[in-house]
Amino acid sequence: MNNTRKHQKSIEMENQTKIDRISNLPWDVLDIILVHLPLREAARTSVLSSKWRYKWTGLSQFVFDDKCIHSSMVDKAARWMEIMKIINKVQSSHSGPIEKFKLAAYCCPNQSDFDQWIAFLTKKGIKELIIQDFSFIKRFKLPSCVFCCPKLSCLELFGCIFKLPAFFKGFDCLKSLKLSQVFIVSDTLESLICNCPALERLTLLNIDHLAFVRIHNPNLKYLKLDSKFEDICFGYNPLLVSVDIRMIPMYGWTIPWRPEQGKVCNLIRVLGSFGGINRLCLYGQFLEFLANEDVPQRLPTMLNCLSALEIREVRFTSLRDVMSLISILRSSPNLKDLLITVETLDEVHKPVMDFVISQCLYDFYLNQLKVVNIRGIVGTRTELEFIKLLLAHSPMLESMTIVKYSGERILESVLLQLERASEHVKFISLTL
Image (cartoon, rainbow, N blue to C red; front, side):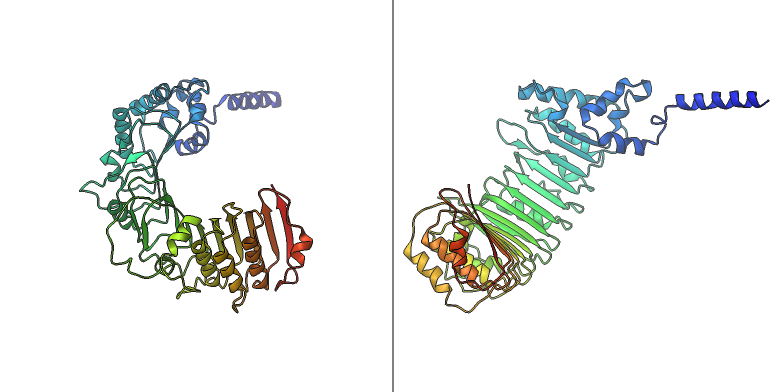
C-alpha cells in the first residue's frame, strides 16, 4: 500500500515539473517581466511555444533603441524598415493599453508610417511618449492627434515642428516636458506651459525660433534651458527648486519690447522670482545678459533657500560676468556648495581685477559655504584675487579644490599663505 502511494506521489511530482508555470502567470505579471527585457529579446520569446507566439506584441511598453536593430545595419532608412516590421505585428494583434513608447534608434522614419503609428498609440491611452535620436531631412510635422492624449504624463520630442491645434485645451496630466531641436514660436511655448497644470519638469534644448521665453506655471519644480533666446521672464512659479540656464545669444535678431522688461537690471527682474530655489546653474553668456543695467551689490529679494550654485564658463575678462557672479554670491546667505568653471583666457582686464579687489573691503560673509570647486583657471591675477575673496569671506569653508587645465598646479603652500576666514579649510590643487 505504501509503495502504491509513493508511486502516485512520484507521478504527481513529475507532472508538476512538466507544468509551464511562467506561461500560466497572469498577463499583468508577464507584462512586467517582458517590459524589462530589450524589445528584441522580448520578441524572441515567440519561439518558445504556440502560447508565446504573440505574447510580446501585447506589451504595455515599447522601447525602440539600438538593441532592436543589428549593429551592422547603418543605413537609416533600412533601420526604420526593421522597426516597421515590429510595428506592423503589434498593430495587427495588440489588445489592451500601451502606456509607453520610446524611439531612440538612429533611423529615418517615413512620415506617413510614423503618423499612422502615433495615431495608433493615441488610441491606446499612451502615458509616456518619447521621440529622440532619429534623422529627418527637415523638421517633421507633429501629428495633431498627439494633443488628444488625456493620460499623457511624459512628453519628449525631437526635431519636430510644434504647433498647437485650435482644439487644444491642455495636457491635464503632463508632469515632464522635454523639447529638443524643436521649432516652436515664443507665444506657442508660453501657451503650452500655461496649459499643463501638473507640469513639474521642463527641459528646452536648442529650440528653433525662440526669441522670448516666458515661464509661468504654479506647479513647476525643475527647469533646464539651453538654447538661443533674446530674453526671459519668470511669472508665478512658487515651487521652483532647480534652475539651469545656458543662453546662446541670437545675434542680429530684434524682438518687440515688452512691458515686463522695463529698465530694471535683468539680474533683479529674472532672479528676483527665485526666492524658493535651492539649486541654480548659470552660464557665462547668461551672466552678461543679467548685467544689462546697474548691477546691485545684492538682490532686493535674497536667495535664502539656495544651497548649491554652479556658475559655468565664467569669463574673468568680462566685468559684467564677474559683477553678476559676485552679486549672486552676496545674495545667497545659506549657500553650501559652489562650483565655478572658467573660460580659459590668460588676459587680465584691470577694471575686472580692481572690482574683485574692491569686494574684499566689504563686510559680507558666506557663513554657510563649505565646499568650493574652481576648474579651468590659468592662474591670472584676477583669478587669484577671486580665490582670495572667497577665502576671506567664508568662515565655515571646509574644502577648496582648484583645477588648472594647463601648466603647473598652484602649490598648497602658496594657498596656505593667503588670508582665510576658516582655519580648517583643506586645499586640493590639481592640473590636467
